[in-house]
Image (cartoon, rainbow, N blue to C red; front, side):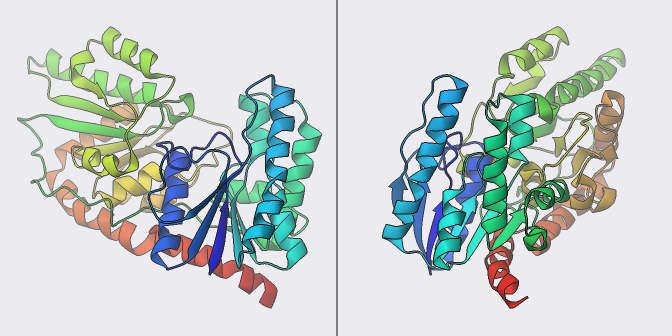
Length: 389
């Protein structure tokens, strides 16, 4: 098929290092492996394409005041229609953006199947965490896009609940959690680290932003190092933070205040192809989310941790317990509880037999339940199923 992949969000560099970028790359790579002809429509490719495709660049979005940026984003999205008319795709696959409605409108008007992938309730997110001047217009765009799409795939039940309240066709909304590239990420070949006597590395992958709870993880590792020092033992706990972001300086400062600066490594942003090697350096991985009133994420990091055969210590929020088989693949702890997080890490380290078995069990869960190939195949089948219904 000739597939148009549309992402009119200027905040997502398609071939960048952000989580959203990795998600987009994963979908594109699956489409390429399946033999489809791919046309990428985006205002921000963010680098050289990693696979053969035809790039159609949308007009850039203004960096001026918020109101002007919003108008500029809508003008940029409006250009999608003419591009699709020129391409004449057999299917439109769009990543929902705050001002993106032209792609689903075009597909609906031209009888072309379409899939709209929704990763967050962007109207609520923009109004709460950033700035949204014309909220009524953003709500109209969301209603138009979600109602016209042949199928709407949401990364979590929380996102799907929001989508159903917006769309006039809630029957077309489905939940499809994120996936992982199990060909790119593999478990380490080195032996599982002993419970004592050598360095033990706690890992985190993600953008350094407040909603990931990284400060809690640093504080937990600080507790663990302090307990070793109090027992007159040389510190063996290490923290490896893979990713960049606005909290880098505050995380570095916190590690300094806790006296563990020499036990913490921040790699900065790492390309998707480099994440696999960093995961293999870890003995346990963490998703230390803080308490949040509405947790609607489907964390990419957890599926990457599983593909790497790592035990995972994570906050018991949203769909995280389901992804970790309700604690079978790693301890679940109360969100924001530093003491519980430290104890969960201590428990994993002490149980060498469990960690050894998890290298196989976690990998098996990723391969059998969470591949990007399965996610994309299910998404592409939905428009036809909706028409049949």
